[in-house]
Image (tube, rainbow, N blue to C red; front, side, top):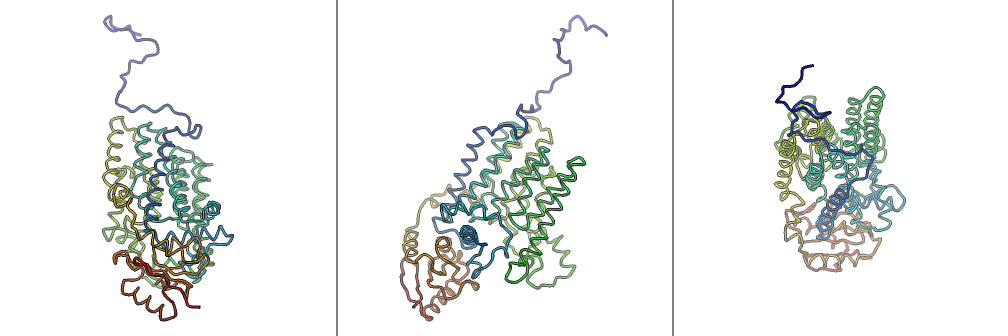
Length: 496
């Protein structure tokens, strides 16, 4: 060995002469996954998100802006389970069996809560809690992989993302259960905990019939990352996912459905009994996925909160089943960014975001740029989706007609059969057998009819102003008498 030149200071023991980069983000010194409780600030973030979601949901409901489709339908399902029988919905039709519409037995978990508080608010608060807690596994993963600041930013940008807000702002849906399951499963998968990933994914089969395809993709990704033993587990999970879809769609749902078939096949075939040629099907599966332009806009919006970096992670493939069925659907409400259809996609794209940032080995400066960009997109989009209502003065003002509506509804006795306007139905579902006024499949000749005649034309469904007026006149001609008429609310009772 050669001695160093005389003018070179000797290195201290155990110090390397190799230059050290100071721009690389150091790996945080944290415990192994699953071995420690989340820090207080994570629970604070989750609690804050819950309060935001609950405020948005409850305030929307209190302002008579929730709907028969879907809040009342789900409340009638939960009420059925709470009363000890399989779920039915009067909104869908007289004694309509909901297990013939969608396979969502997970709703039975809400029955104990509904025993304690039989109200649509129970469902809304449960959904707020489920979606809020989904931020926890993503923040824990980001904390371990990227550090505290990254975990805070990612948790908040995820929690305030437009896809979650759209779901929270539009009633209640069974997909609320899928959101934390997906977040836990993908966080485990991203950290190499394959067994945990599979165990979190399998309950998705009880959320909705289409979720089996999502489970299948998670299983395939687990198999890809595993050794021989883990590969068998992943493949078995994928098989279970596909089998779950087939069992639900081909056996369970047709067995309960009044039509004897799975209704939503028509959303792909183009209508019940439609016979689409091979060319049309190929067009739908290719060009149809990106036309009209609404579909492309939705894809851009899905990836924009992660600055498109989610595309660098294989975890983004878990979104494919949902994106594909929405793209090939003939129902244009599935194509856009409204309603709840992007709710389950947000945990997927944000899990892919965390995975991609970790895989890139981003420098500290680079990580800050990605996080600031994601936060900027979140702030930019905030006023345009449901959470933006919290910043509007009108959201906190209560129309005096709301008190009138409840005063008139109080005249309807518990247990009565009722037809009501769309936005009144959720306020009657907990104590009456209520269906939708003007809906062809509603129970005929109810004991009571209550209609809000002052709903703005652009918000009316299913009847226009003219058709509603005609329907009320027909009811009176059949023997219904006017019991109350106040501030645009009309209450009719059937003459005995």
